[in-house]
Length: 417
Image (cartoon, rainbow, N blue to C red; front, side):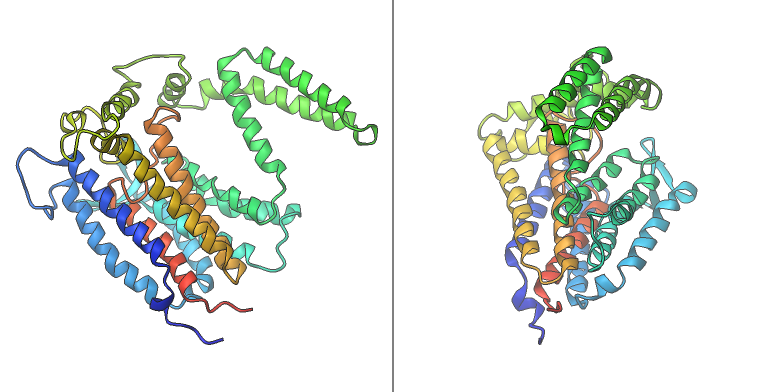
């Protein structure tokens, strides 16, 4: 089957959405970091100047990716993954500490965050593994190996950046799409529910409710399906997990992690301390009303009331200056991009490119969901940037690579029938 030209088969909808999000992101970074004295948009001493440089660097990067043969990424996926793991391991020796986290390599005035690039590397490695015709996720052997690919980089990232490590868990959704038994997801959701419930209520009450539910499920099942041993094991595991939450919360979590959960759950209200960011974020977004105060007219933004507004809290600038309508438009763009990638993934001819497409969609979704939920006070502050919007060269370049590798796969359909 003869290859068609890449240019004629590029999905321009994905490319256009990417460009629009990058441009809108830069405008919000510009607004959130504009100094009192007017300077050039290319002023590298300013945050928006550095971001403009990264945007310009993305252009030749895109050209290079689209020029490479589509099968290159599959052939060298293992090499790319190993290189990513080595870069993460190197942080323990050569990493530079910035704001309490040693997750950067420093090169003069610029820094590189390898965890961002490890995301597309892990997506490639997982796609390569699942693309093997012999892999069957209904078997424990393949389940553990696939989960190992996902959590190997997590083990290297957690000590430096728990927020970035959270992103990799989204790839479990891809495994579910490829045949992972549903009980994995249900177990995860139940564990999260038990964890939050155990922080809000006394553990004994949670255990009694669990006993009631297990008993009801046991007697509602058909006699032939009843298993007293399995039901007892489930109850014991739930009870043990519930009673362990307080110990883990008090002895494993760091103080700032405990504070963020307490603020989220309404157990503590410290508007001048740990709750300051979330409170100012809500004020900024709420003050925008329906249509916003206008570009460069946000009083909360101009006053610098929202910390880290150009990075993790960039969405507050959208809410204040563009209002509810503008925020809804940005959300629409992200959802459209994710759904478009899912649509393209389903029409791929090989399992490798299909799985990679789902990985791209999953990573974009978890970033988008966690970041917007975080600035609205619906999720603890975990330092997850908004793709193409938040300031950061590593993030922008990594998302560019992540997305355009799939654009290349989709355009260059050299897949075997």
